[in-house]
Length: 234
Image (cartoon, rainbow, N blue to C red):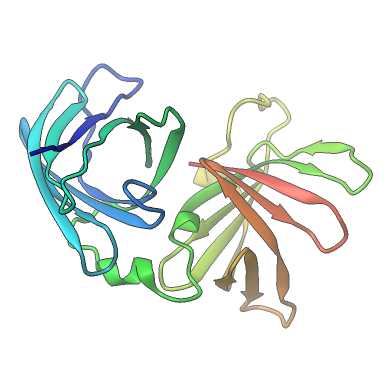
């Protein structure tokens, strides 16, 4: 009987093993899968959600940032998965397909309500903190934002937009995350409909509606006048 072998290599920049507990979302077996991972010392266990109702249990070992496990698919098909853990995401390769897939870590709590990920008008790939990298104007000129605007999307369809004060000596390659640099915080309601994102500020009656695309850890939000802003997942 063939097995779906999962090799999830959770690699970090540091030498110690990172805490991998939580819920991840993205393309694993199909386009919309969730994975709950629970670590217990050198052992791990978890559940892969093929959809909101159908699941596959797995268990395995976790040592030196490497999680190894094997699971049996209901159709007895066989695949090999190799994943790399980085910050609040997992990078996954599903062999024989060599393309690298991005799984978004939507929660650090394994008790997270999975049904939220299958709600209407909420794209789980948006969840979490995104920092602006650059803005491309309609004429093609580029303005480097360097993390000036940080948007955090929550699963209750609320979001915070933080506008940060960037010191003059900040390096272009460094994101600004220090809360002391926070100069303004705005709260929004948000929802998605296909590839359309709507953001409704609480403080004034002016909605932003535009197209968006998420490619792995990169978010692009298109303005109505032809420009667009590029964000990176943090």
